[in-house]
Image (tube, rainbow, N blue to C red):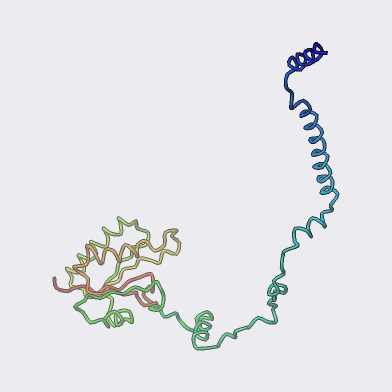
Length: 222
């Protein structure tokens, strides 16, 4: 009997203490149950229709009553503002029909200038033809350099002759892609290298070239 107990002790000692002997089986069993549970939930979600999913997602959404109807402005509800048949409209109609000429000082192409020591109304009188044109030069067809040389010689001669009023024809640049180039350079020259000879200038009357020509009053004494 004693020998049997000792034999069992030795047998137990040789096998060792094994508390996790059945742990593997338990994990396998639990894992199998967990996988089955996840699979069932996934299958339940798949069985839901798109409409059911949409209603679940919109369950807490509230409707804003202010935006249930958006008013649409129709042609009937628009206000039509009548155009008044005032003097401005009548004047434009006369100009378009050719019964009235354009007032050149009202256009953006009109130019005028007067020296600070001279009365300001001289430009109005100059434009209206109060001063007789004593000589003129036509710069049409010239390059900028050619026009500058020609104008310089013309002004020197006019001052030498003690001319009071002259005219320079420069055109409006309507056919030029760069606009009225000579006109722009003329203004630059009159305020620059030729300023010592100039008292005033203004756009010419219609009969003398209008917006394509400029009257100039020269100093008769330097």
